[in-house]
Length: 261
Image (cartoon, rainbow, N blue to C red; front, top):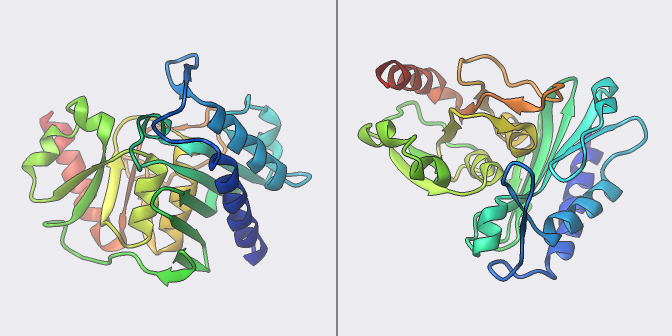
């Protein structure tokens, strides 16, 4: 990838902002897709805009709102997008959703961008170029002690009780909706980490994974292996995303919680 990809990502996000501007969060109808996930006209409108801008000849495409095409597996470069990550929050009018664009090269998330139109946060970054928030360079929090760290948790996972063991630990936990938005906040230095121990689709994670890597952080599978994208089954077993100084402590904490559960 090169700087032109960052320009393309930002241009696509701003075009998507225009597409979603005609819909009002909290006042939009939805239907349920197979599997129970909600879908709105806004998801489809943004998907169309992103697809018209991002993939070039020879590049693959993976989106939550497009039928998967196995031809992407033959492509070195693949755009992995979620037109609206956090559709439930969008429908409920909770300002924790975003438009998410990730660029994957040879299975690695190398560039990404997320835009939360409600909070007006545009986070873009790539390996070798760092991360920007609304055009200004930002850095990740580089603490070395997990105690007192701000960790972003999934609203739905907290509701299901999956974070109960972590609430007993000396960390600060804040519930946030969208997966991609949480990862973007970590990459922008607005939180120390986020993780999930349940499977997530690649389109939920790719953009944020690229941003965390661009910011000098670590993103890995719950077992500590590297996160790889553009897989035949585009789903991760979960992920851990933290500053590099917290990686070992976070792994130790998660392994201990899993043993004791």
